[in-house]
Length: 249
Length: 286
Picture 1 (cartoon, rainbow over the protein chains, first blue to last red):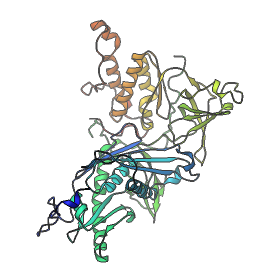
Picture 2 (picture 1 turned 180 degrees about the vertical axis):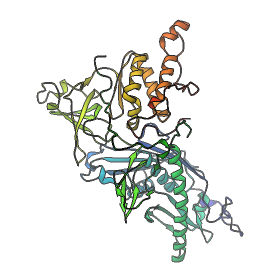
Picture 3 (picture 1 turned 135 degrees about the horizontal axis):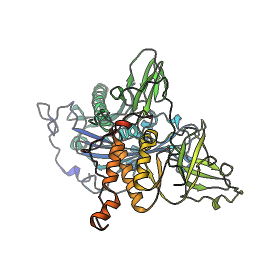
Picture 4 (picture 1 turned 135 degrees about the vertical axis):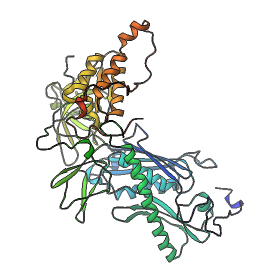
């Protein structure tokens, strides 16, 4: 993103309310989810969301490594979010950085609040999120992938965890920002929803919004999450389709 | 075959529990509300504000007033009495730690073996990587799993290789009254031990081991189909190494992967229904 400042700001919103890729303000990018893509992991999922490609794999509950992180009354959730070197235009320097540590932490904490961790004392549930191609909103795409992978791994939890980012683009509140909108927009507000209770278990914000805009953005985000929730459920239903007696499924 | 080949198999009583027909098997996902009045939450569910929700992905089972969800995936959940195949992961002075595919490693104490083990001499009997056949004795609230090696057929599994199937598929690998496992051992000549944890120990000549693992993969992927035993039998007969030798002197290239003979007749619907409620359902094949 080093050369971004040198470029001209693109037209983010046309007078008739169309965004840079032709979407309306409340429209999601196309999203496709596949559950159970890895045979090594206990659960896995692959998410293609706009130009994002994210894979998630879940192991566990299993023995805790390193041991000192073990807790006597519950499972620990160890989440690792990582971006591949080739996931962005300019090569991403591989390995841990402050951004990936922060995202790993907030995603792990979001899952900690929905997983029944007390059912598996002294164990670890390891969640790996690999971003293969990034185009804004990868923490939400990663969280969605990981949530489907957790369900695929048979982990008991309150609910699936749909997530989406809402932003402010050219003065308007818009759902699910893509890269140009994220880079040149005024604000970005990623969130994750527990549909069963309506609680938000992840909420971050970058940029500025008025109080009124924030309320509007939250409403829009919750509606977006509910749409994504349906896609997540459809992916799991497809993987575990009930075979009819004749074998047709 | 000196060792019994299906020690892990246990029949589960179905008295008083009419097993629902296939069509009634309802898949539920975490967070989905289970409709009904005055329900009491069983395993795989939770209750908030008088409503019951599923907490795991699985099949809904109503046993009034309880509802429960039988999981379709996930790690092996130890049950006392289960015979499981484990792998030694650590050797301590008085016990070994076994990976049985459960959330925790299971300690096998030296007094739980049929051998006269002295303190500090555990390493002379079992080393890291050895396979063993043990029985689950207890499951504590802390998640600690107690296992024993004292019992009929239990002990160290010498040689052979390990294969894995999903714990939800074990019933299918065994088959009704062991029909599937009988077919496999009869047609491959391999020794096969199926643990309730989905670990399968296979011993025999390399070709036999290869064929057994091909069949296990077939069962894993197509476990929800009916007439599976017939399909497996057809596959094993069609790929018999003896037939290969007669055809072209034994130098024939091996069949690359187990083709699913979907066009073959499946004459025996006998394994369409069996003990395990989860058996005829799951991810569909291509």
